[in-house]
Image (cartoon, rainbow, N blue to C red; front, side):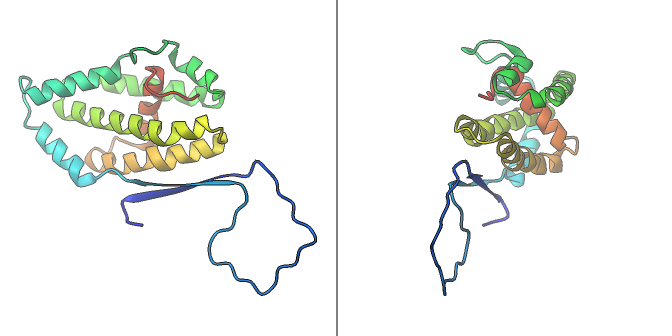
Length: 202
């Protein structure tokens, strides 16, 4: 596995297995042994060099540049409610997903994210970073975390996967460009996307 890959093993031991009156001798097992369902997930981490190039390019943009207009339009889509989905707010979305344990942190971090996004509307570089960060969070969550939720994995498994496959790798790359992109900032953006109905927890 390369340094740019993240691996996660998801195990579900929901069904117990009992083996009796059996004798196993002179056997050697090299590797993992498990009973029940196991899912191995390997994903590529975001590329720091590619992100640095994006940031460098963004510094050259002007407000009349077509690329900058595209960035603003794409970012505005993330900042608005997702069309076609019922607007119920962050709290109700977490309640519907049986994640009331996240409510306090989610409300606090979402508020931080909202203020941060509103505060930096005049910076092409930051707007570019926010667009790519929100897009990567949304894609990673929908691709890797939502299937775990829908398959009935435990909250602990979902939270571990969210950290390992979404928050930590994205923070690792973006914080090299802007140190304010902490793990808590990434969580805030995730809950911001939840409140805007881009991310679902059920």
